[in-house]
Amino acid sequence: MAGPEAGLGVNAMRMLAFVVALTTISFAQAPAATLPPPVKSAFEKAYPGATIAAATQERENNRTLFRIDCTQNGRRRVVLYDVNGAAIEVAEQVEEKELPQPVAAAMHSHPRAIYVSGLKVTRGTSVEYRLTVRGTRKTAMVAKPDGTVVSFK
Image (spheres, helix red, strand yellow):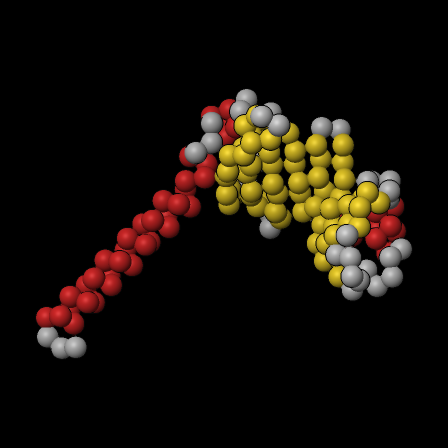
């Protein structure tokens, strides 16, 4: 294509790239903007410097919850808040070396199980470790801090 049509195509492409860039910038800032003030305040107080990757509204047992996916110091964290800003559940990325000894022992008691990733999930006073393993047919393990295996699928 030659002539004015070619110039229009380039300008149209530049405009499209500009619109996409603006949309991306707006979307990146949107998650925190959609949170109720008590939730946003509680999150910022509990995790200063954390970067919000996503914020979504969910329903659980007929109540509205807000899920915030974030990263801080290279680690992933997911926090569930109620509408008043009270933390309901916190799931934090853990490395294998940070697992309590009984949890690591329970995982390694399964032949060929190799640690891939894990989350420490705290809900109220209940704590459990949700691990992803490989080298075995079963790939998902949930254990209590004392090493009791809740499930291994």
